[in-house]
Image (cartoon, rainbow, N blue to C red; front, side):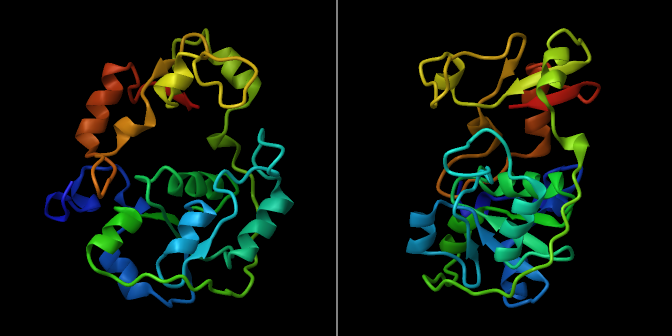
Amino acid sequence: MSLQQITPPEKRGYADPSLFVTTDWLAEHLGDPDVRIVDTNYPPEYAEKHIPGAAGVADNYYKTSGEDRTHIQGPEQFAQTMSSLGIGDDTVVVATDSHGGLYSLRLLWSLSYYGNTRGKMLDGGLPKWIAEGRAVTTEVPSPPPGRFTPRENRAVIALKEDVLAAIEDRDTVILDVRSDSERDGSNKRGGLRGGYIPGSVHLEWLNFHTGGDVPTIKHADELRRMLADAGVTPDKNVITY
């Protein structure tokens, strides 16, 4: 999608367009002490180039360690991770990546899980920023530590027992957003078995953004139609994986 074809997020029909910030907005807030930019790309991509002032992450899954890939970091560890990025309780966090929001939204979900609802996603991410001719850097900032207070938000996570109960619950849809190869079991991604949760529906995550050189999240009407066709409607509880 070209820059001229990109509809601003506030005109795409989203229920909450405040989830996004534009490149113009971010350019005006570079250096704002209450705003922290987090580049969620993998370290080699971050080292090559990033938005000035953006902090980088060692692992955009926010798992307990490189070896234990099962669970999100516990409250104390997550608070330390956020503090090291300069994120406190009142920080506006702007997440950016080069992959259509794939990595940015992991940070926003993690923040939401631990009670920070001030996370934003840079619309169009780093590709849009670069396509507009804006400055990038290799300099790694040293932000002052933040004071992050983790407050677990149980409403945004499903545990094993929730998923087991949902399999037979007609009011709940289990939405599998993994790749086609993970769904059909040919790519186990390090797991013991391939396949999918019984009764789940499948929409690979790539279907949710526009693709192209500057991918953005699709218009709300298009998303609603796509989800409805898969049985994911507003009257349903939804568990994603």
